[in-house]
Amino acid sequence: MGLFSSHAALAARYDAARASGRMPTGVVMDRLLSASEAIIDGRRTVTAGTHNYLGLAFDETCIEAAVAAVRREGTGTCGSRIANGSFADHVALEAELAAFHGLRHAMTFSTGYQANLGVISSLVGAGDFLLLDADSHASIYDACKQTQASAIRFKHNDPANLDARLRRLTGEPGDKLVVVEGIYSMLGDMAPLKAIVEVCRRHGAYLLVDEAHSMGVLGARGAGLAEHEGVLDQVDFVVGTFSKSLGAVGGYCVSNHDRFDLLRLACRPYMFTASLPPATAASVRAALKAVAERPELRERLWRNVHRLYAALDDAGFALGPTPSPIIAVRLDSEATTLAMWRALLDAGYYVNVGLPPATPSGESLLRCAISAAHSDAQIDGLAEQLIRLGQDFGALAAPRQAVTGR
Image (cartoon, rainbow, N blue to C red; front, top):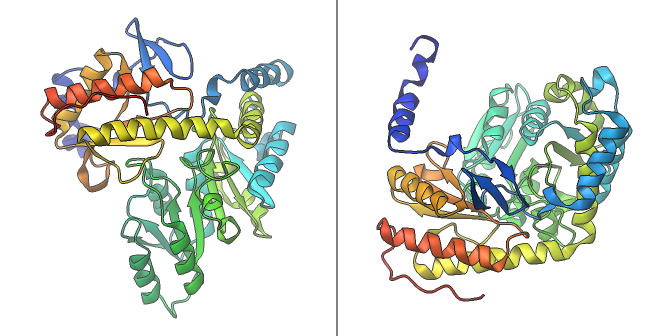
């Protein structure tokens, strides 16, 4: 295999899975019809795996803002902000992000991945300690590789284990940065943030919360889990993305730290990557306003979440521990997961597949991403198909229950 010989085990798994049928990596959306439907293989398909949590990727105000920006400023920035300067929308968006979170400073990145990679690797270095939840996103783990800080994992959502790790570092020179997520992307569970804040304050550790899947979803104004738990003023850094609730692409970090702007000179993913296109910055500004001013979007999202979660839980599926916009159906094998995913797509429902090593404890998952844009009929149809397939493939021990309005 030459250059690819180090990926021999992955190649064997991939080839075996591909031989058994269609792969999740090969799905093409022929045409997007709305925030909840697409044409796939010429068939109208319900999209329940696109993370468009509030449906804002198809919001008319956001679309018009993007169109106007393209006409006014062109299709791209053609370089980084360090080299090509900032557009007015970049500066305005950062001011609005900071104000939305009630913090003083903000900076934007071209992707959420780069936000984590750049901020984390720039905050700690040689002689420092980076403590991360064991179920952290790949971007957080990759940030560990970009810093000379000592990386220490603690048990998932376990403040006591974090406390023990930090206690062992008592007296050690160097800063301690703890990294957790608001809603974890595989099982949809939430961090016990109040307890983690208490542990960090007790040991003098800094705290960064990745609110990628919780911004727009939690909190009275949609600022995320830190707002929801009433500890936003006790979190040192909040990282988020524009590719979930805000319906676009990009990432950001907000903070109250006085020297925050030094990150613009230290974050290589910020300094050496082309900045957000005008259309993206403009659409995100419109989406941010919608998050703040339209709480009914969150209400509709959570109604859909509870409707699907309750139906699948009643049917006997093993799910993530708490309802959230990510509803993970936990299955016993990779083969069953792929087979059910293919059958679900054939029935007109697109969801995500989660397979090891990307999943916690090596589990295989069918992962639904629920939106405020889904109708009751779409939620009920997805539940009915999952229950039918769960029985057909032996993934449900309990008898199938009829789905009723919830």
